Image (cartoon, rainbow, N blue to C red; front, side):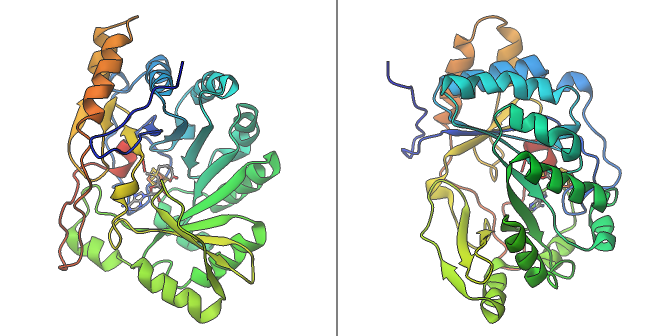
Length: 336
Ligand code: SAM
Ligand code: SF4
């Protein structure tokens, strides 16, 4: 029997599911969360069993890549049980990649067990190499703990990609240091433009905005930058830095529209399926799960119906010096 495929109305194959397993986090990065956050009550979240059922159904329907995110996925109680359980889909060959995006704070404990569950690559978010600045950005983060976590992940054999949010006035003076450090350590480094998520003031957001076109220009001033052919399916484009051999990526949701190659959907921690990060439309999978214990057909039908509604693209736009298409949701809720 051939593997089923999820195809959206624009003939894009949906093979990648990102799952937010919690809205909670041990950090309060200023572009992501307010300092005083009210988190969801536990009953609102999908249980680990529900997450398993949901992800397994997607895998059964043709999803081959699963990224676990949050909030901070590694602060979700019992999350390693979930990873262990998902590893069965890697063993069967149905799932090609099981991965996660993390702030690195828990990696000292979890890097090795993650590797043992079949995780081979992870994204670690770090916006600065300066411990003081790190404290200011994350409010509660412990820089040393994250650095130890990165070392532990490296030692465990996990391939590391670093994600840095480009923040004018905050880390724009560290571009070359970060490129050099990541290159030396053998990590890819991807810069992400700050997106209009959550409920921060418009003035703040615009003043933080450091366009990646500017980063590209600055890279050329210091390094020999080699273009790498476009890799399809993901939002990042990459260049290689000749001197370090490392790759530097750019995720430019605001200056470059990558929607035409979008292959993903997102499940938030309450079980709402978001067909596009930049549109409000979602589909309530939790209700379908809870209304139909032991019968996955209604869930499959609901997934098919939702995919048939996947929109062509998002409407984020800073170009007229005001934010259009702004989302009410926090990134930590939907998963970055
Ligand atoms: N806690 C984990 C972490 O920080 O990697 C996973 C969740 S976090 C929401 C996922 C990614 O979203 C991180 O790389 C973070 O920097 C990014 N992010 C959060 N808020 C953002 C924003 N407003 N604009 C752009 N990226 C953002
Ligand atoms: Fe937490 Fe990640 Fe958001 Fe920072 S970006 S507050 S680490 S969820």
